[in-house]
Image 1 (cartoon, helix red, strand yellow):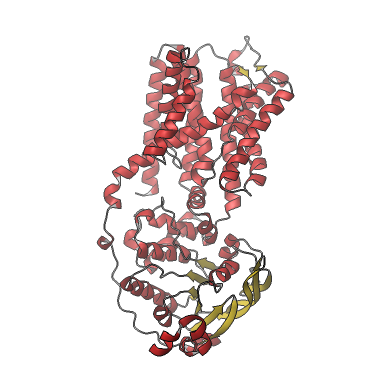
Image 2 (cartoon, one colour):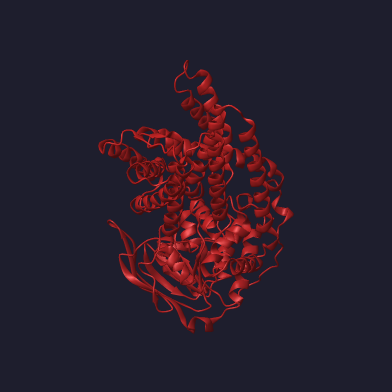
Amino acid sequence: MGRGTSFKRSAGILAALSAVYLLLVFIVPDQYYQLMLTLVAIWAVMGISWNVLSGYSGLVSFGHAAFFGLGAYTVALSLLHFGLTPWIGIPLAGVVGAIAGVLVGLPTFRLRGHYFALAMLAYPLALLYVFEWLGYQEVALPMHRENPAAFMQFSDGRIYSVIALVLLIVAILISRWIETTRFGMALLAIKQNELAAEAAGIETRKWKLKAIAISGAIAGAIGGFYAVILIVVTPASVFSMLTSAQALIMALFGGIGTVWGPVIGAAILIPLSETLHAELGNVLPGIQGVVFGVAIVLVILLAPEGIFWKVRDLLGRDDKDQKPGDVETVFSDPGELIERPEIMSGRTILEVRDLSKNFGGLKALQNVSFKVPEGAVVGIIGPNGAGKTTLFNLLNGFVTPSTGEVTLEGQNLIGLQPSGVCKLGVGRTFQVARPFARLSVLDNVLVGAYVRADDDETAFRHAREALALVGMEADADRPAGGLPSKEQRLMELARALAGKPKILFLDEILAGLGSSEINDVIVVLRKLTESGITILIIEHTMQAMLRLADHFIVLDHGALLGEGKPRDMMRDPKVIEAYLGKRWRERA
């Protein structure tokens, strides 16, 4: 399905839901249920705010009450002290939320996993005590009876529901825009595999800061509107743990990482919790918390990613169950490599000088130096623990060397982030395939294409060209999570190629493949070498390496054991003793 068609379908769904919501607003006579409808929209927006950061990027936040509460107090205090109407105060609350998001993100994005989640939890708790200490335990919004509409004070509660709907529509459009642009693609890539995202040229820190700024702005704005609904703002009502939990639960229950998830969650959970609270609150105090707790348990047990994804997966099961053979591309036998001695005398594209890495007392790499000529295929071989993957991580920016230099066409790579290395022209695949499972094959490759594309049209063209190079054009719309091993390897190769690299780093791209699958991948790699691309490859399958490489670099215990023509290295007694073993000598 094209993105234009998808957007039209989303617009149709949004229009239909808005019509249903407005119909309910104007046919429900009871003020309590009118307020409930307003709360559905408010918590849907709050869920979208959480989703923009945590749902798309995977960084779980327990602290969105900080942005929500700051927005609420911005509106309340600006009206109380400066007479500023909420019509201006709510956008101002969004600005405050965005600034707070950046200030929170700068230090907190240094953390990972549960450390990030716990750090985020500290912010609203700290603000709760700060506002109590400042004397704002209870801030009542002053009434303006002479001109109530100018200060968003209406006797008809349905008007608040309409305003809440407008704010929800704006939040949905923002979320939909993020979801369908490189912004959302970058966040989803970060969520599913941050290392692969960095290697594909995504500046993860920059995109996460943008996400938390937008997330904070949405939370701040809806917090400001919530203050108008509350009339009396207290720290406990806007900075509490329950506030953050509700935002998380709306998205988690409905479906994380999708624009409709928070809407689904709010539409189900808010009416359920509010109705039970009204009917049983005097008998079972805290029944709302019970509803949210049960919702979390049910989601964890039955639909870990939420209702939206569960339903989509059930509807798409036929596609996922498609056998690999139904779409397998048939390749021809590559034959033996025609030796290219002249290629090693060409222009140097990558130079490594005295590269070392120490992990405490362990010398993982020791004074390794070599050159890679343009258009060559250079194989890195050696026993397990020789330092091969460490070498790749040093060259790729994932690890900082203790000493040494690495230059690509004269440009220094040391000190650059992996995304910066990628932008200079380095493509990378990994020892363990790192697909973005929730994205299609085309979108996986598109993530890599953005690094060298100025616009979406160019990125799409580069992505499709890369898929054609590896023989996967027919698989563009397949979900990446359902691909067999060979197709995952080829897709990851296409993602690296889509960035138009000057050199490819391939880390055991043949690992886990059968003999016929290895043959198919070798055919693709040989096509790439014939097109003039430069490849640096780590591989344990020696027969395959002899059919691919122009030159071998042999590592042992982190040191350079030797380098030269592949067949010469295979006969070298030091290489046989350290890596190949006596059986290879007998076979040779």
